[in-house]
Length: 333
Length: 307
Image (cartoon, rainbow over all chains, first blue to last red; front, side):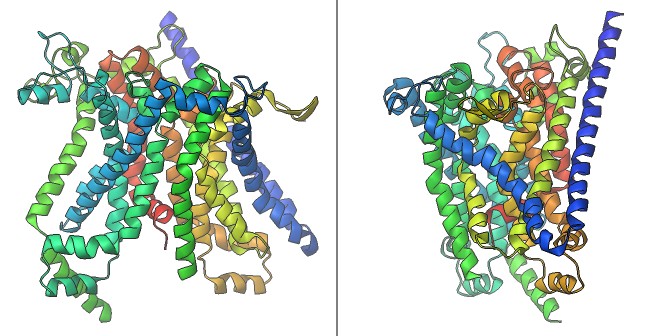
């Protein structure tokens, strides 16, 4: 009886949320249509100005409120104390670069930034080259690409199960990694607790997801290499390996660097995997996770903001490279 | 004719290059890549006692399956914690507006930047692209303060707080703001390439900028819109950080990912519930992904390898 009532109220809650959803969408559509309707009926002279208000202003306002102003405020908060009441100078930054725990976090973030992009790109490139030499690469590529659709949280659970360790020797292992270690004659340990191995095990999860991304982009770049060049190299008698090193890689160098920098940005911001798999314990925490802890657990907006700024400084050169790369391509066109 | 010859050439180069070894290794990698997900799926279908006493690979010799884990995790709440189906509804309530709103605003802006003649067009375009430099983390604290307390300068209230904390609205707005730079960038790339003659012909016929948008730009941009919609849909569905921060810890509006992350922390040992829950959360994005992979790949290529 009680259970029935509970289900009833669950259904009611779901129904009210979905009604709210439908109403929101309808109201939004009506507001947009109304703005359009009114703007179209103004005189041509007025339209000259109205068109900027309707088309451009909403985006600029959102970008200003959501990104530009907050970024400036975060910079300001990073020089203030926990509640933002008093100016503290560089104290938060000095804290970040002297506390042993934070230094450990910066080191881990550095490992992520180096290992994750190189591993993902190298694997992605290898698979792109292999599938380029297949007659029907569709299914293989889809399977390797699929983790891209899986959330970091979902991936975290999938791999946590792979890394699961059974401390009781009399009970069979249920984690695949432990079982494989046993089959190979090693003694499994509690993988996720063992630093620094655990950081690399978390990087494996990230690489598992990002390899598909690297593969798709690089595979498209390889397909775009003019066939004349490939033919010429074949007529010259270049072997598969030589062709790869002397023709393929130099031809797609620009794309490789873009892939590397994109994945590096992702690695620098990694949060969900750490949160799901270790919660940042056992020496696995990284900047993005500590930033969350400082801001929303310790409620220290000063140190949290300083960590966000450090993250920002790490991203700048990478995005700057991408922007310059884009500008150059535009002017070549 | 020329095309046929060209295709013939491709074929000869291709057949020279295709090798059984490459195929073999690639298939091996694909299998390796799928095993962890497959293990999760198999486990989610096993009874609790089986999961905790033997590895999932043993089902090959001793198959034993149940769907009880799914019905438990989806429909049985515990105390104040609602069952996962409620979080599933929340995810939908978050994803749909968080996809529709940024796309609408972005396609307007992309059109303006691509086809309006005004000073500073280029500056705005590269400025928006460069905004990707700002990590989400840099916006979290100020935005949260804005949503909960409004904006005050001295004692003057510039923006009131509206009392939206604890509703879906802050999450929608945050996703809209964070999704805009990439959305505008992708859509602009597409809209800027619409044929100039077509646009000018319509102008000569007396179409104003609004009509031009409704009758030509919007219908022609549907593939680009689809590409970005898939991106944003997957991004929002899979997001943890934004929902965690702007959801304010309220169970009534928390999406699947927040609940799953919480479950791994507090009920790390309940593999029968965790695996079933995780699989439920993976199902929708993976289905969308397989159904619309073509658009997704197109968007990906436009977003990272330009030209």
